[in-house]
Every structure is written in C-alpha cells, then in structure tokens.
Length: 226
View 1 (cartoon, rainbow, N blue to C red):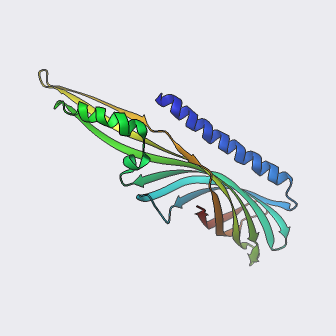
View 2 (cartoon, rainbow, N blue to C red):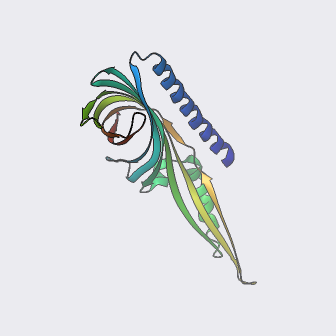
View 3 (spheres, helix red, strand yellow):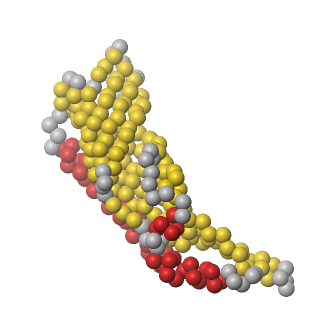
C-alpha cells in the first residue's frame, strides 16, 4: 500500500512537469517577440508569511527561463521549474487530519506500548514538490555595456504536492537472552495537492561575459492568492 501511494504521487509530479513543459513550448511558438535568451538557474526559496503553525519552509530547486524581446527595453519571460520544500510544522501530524492515524493507527501504537519491552520514536517529516509556470513582463536596462538590470512583474500558477510520512523507530527488548531487536520504517500519509494562482515580482542583475554567456543573480517574490 505504501509503494502504491508513492508511485501515484510521483506520477502526478511527472504529469505536472510534462504539462508545464508543454505550455511553455506552446506559448513559445505563439510569442510574437524575438527569442533573446534561454537560461537554466539554480535557486533557494524561503517562505515569508506562514500559517497553520508552520514554523519553517525552505526549498532548493531550479528554473528554466525563456526571454523574448518585444522592444528595446521591454521583454516577456516564460518561467518553469521545480522546487523541493522541507516543511516544519508544530503538531503537524494532528493538523494533517490523517483518518488512518486518527481513527486506527494511533490506538494500535498506544496499545502496543503498554508492553514494557517495546519502545518507539515516531517523527513526522513533511516535503512539498512545487512546479511553477509564470509569465512576466520585464524592463531591460543596460549599464556600461556589460551590466544588465531587469525588473519583472507577472503571475501564473503553481502545482504543488505536499507529502508527510512518519519515520518510526521501534525496539523490543528480550531480557531473558539479553538482546534488543530494532527496526525502522516509513509510514506514508495521503498527499495534499493543489494549483493556486500566484502574483510574481522580482529583479535580475546580469553581467555579460561574451556574446553567448552571462552571469545572473536574481531576487524574486511570489505571493499565493487565496
């Protein structure tokens, strides 16, 4: 049952990635601007505002950005990518509202631990896969021929799959032979999925190395609409 649930989640992520790639190719074909650059970037993200007792959420990932020049100082960008978030949440197991845990498994654990030879450590761990699809309008400004400043504003949609599992470590002590049997496994909860709309803004700084390559650094803000 656990493997089936994980395969289903991975299939959903792959379908979302394929959909984002298809939309980017489709929009690229019908964009009336001139292709000016394609960039692949690594990124680090951190959540600003938090709710539902989330104490920390940060991610590593990467983005694919395709730029089209409309005018001398105006361009349009298509942005796709993938981010893997680690989420920390107070009482996360309770707030997940996992029917199997609430109605059955927790009672079984409590019953098992009445056996004084058994010990258990149960920790909930949360991850979230995020796949954005963003369209932005950018200003393009050049300084000293090799330095670029590109403020951006736009919006789009993000596809997310948030998952939680329990990392369980159990041990049973056999006092009559002086042996402790230990084992560990992961117990996966049903995933939570969604595709909210977002508003996006940022600024990109670039330095031209030569006609084909440049170095970029950017700071971006994404606001999820309720």
